[in-house]
Image 1 (cartoon, rainbow, N blue to C red):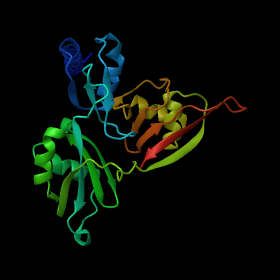
Image 2: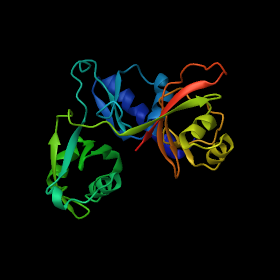
Image 3: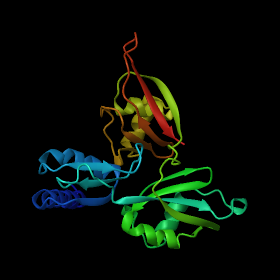
Length: 251
C-alpha cells in the first residue's frame, strides 16, 4: 500500500471516529474515483456512522464524503454549491473546454480537491465547489482564457445538463476487463490486453493492469488516447453464450 493511500485511510478513519464519538457532521473535500473506491473497501471497518457520498447530480464522478450526525439524517445539506458560468457576451465568446474552466478556477489559488465536476453545454458551464470557496469564486472568476464571463452561485440544478454520452452496445465473451475494453475502443482483444498491460487503462480512476478483472457494472473506464467510458450493467446471455453489454462513451 502506497504512503499516500495510507494517509488517506488514516484521515477517513479519524473523520469517521470523530463524527461517531462526538455525534457531529464532518466531511471530506471532493474525492476522486480512486479515493471513493478505497473508502468503499474500508467502510465495513469504520464506526457505525451514517454517511453520504454526493457530487451534486446522479452522474457525478467527484464526490464529497459526508459523515452525518444522528440528528442530521433528515436535514442533510451538502457542503458544496454549484456555480453557473456564462459568457458576458456570447458574440465574442470562445469555444471553451473543461480544461479551460478548471485551469481558470485553479489559477485563482483553488486546490483541485475543492472542485467537483464541471459540466458544459451550449457555451455555459456548471461547476461544483466546496461552499467556503464559492463567494470568492463568484466575485473573482471573470475571465476564462480571453472570454469574459459572469459567475453566480445557483441552487437551481434544473438547468444542469446530463453529460453527453454515446451508447455502444455489443456482446462480449465475458465481462473481463480486456473484453470490455475491446468493445469500448473497438479493438481486438489482444490489442485491448496490450493497452491494459502497458498501464494505459484506468478503472475508477486507478491504473489497472489485470486483464482478467471481472467488472460488475457502473465502473468508469479510461483508455489513454481513446476516451472515457461508463460500463453499464451486464445483460443477458445470447444463444451463443456471450453476454450482452452496453457502455457509454463520454463525448
